Amino acid sequence: MGTVIPHPLLFGFVKEHGSIPAIYTIKESIDFYNEHNSPVFAIILDNEKTFDRIWQDGLLYKLMNIGIKGKMWRIIYLWYKTATAHVQYKTITSKVFKIEQGVGQGRVMSAWLFSLFNNDLIYQLIESNSGLIIEHLHIPCVLLADGTTLLSSSKNGLQILLNIVHEYAQRCRLK
Image (cartoon, rainbow, N blue to C red; front, side, top):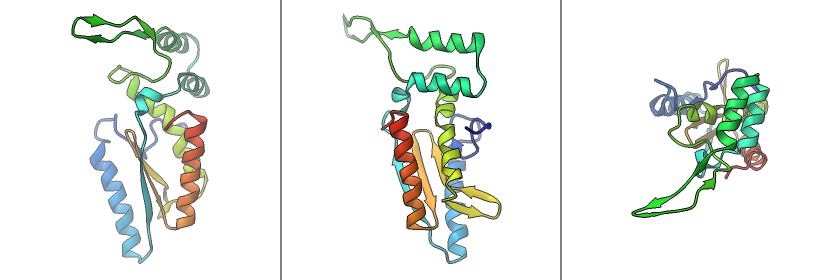
């Protein structure tokens, strides 16, 4: 897994690194290829309920891999392994139930944990050597919140990227 979290191709959740810079990155990349009469193939994927579907055990494993251990790791572990909720509708309240997946939208660390969870996908896409190359920059994707845009200069390259995302989603239990 890479060491920069969030990776520069992961947009959202960071001040001044939201949707406008993400769209600008995509537009400028396409414009660069168009100016050089080169094709660009793209696909936009919408990840279904991503915050709610983060695989907690996978997240805890990734935390260990980047060096978060000891008390901090145990705090996050207990935070998620003991999380419960209930549903209230008007005057009716459900029984308390255990939350077994997800990072919880709106929690203080949720955006960073979400970024961490998806960060290594970007590195896997880069390692494929598929995607767009602009001078010294390799841009196989732009991730913005729960959306993923894959970019390639060939249909075959786009298929390689899509296969990597598919395998990653299966391995990490995402849809």
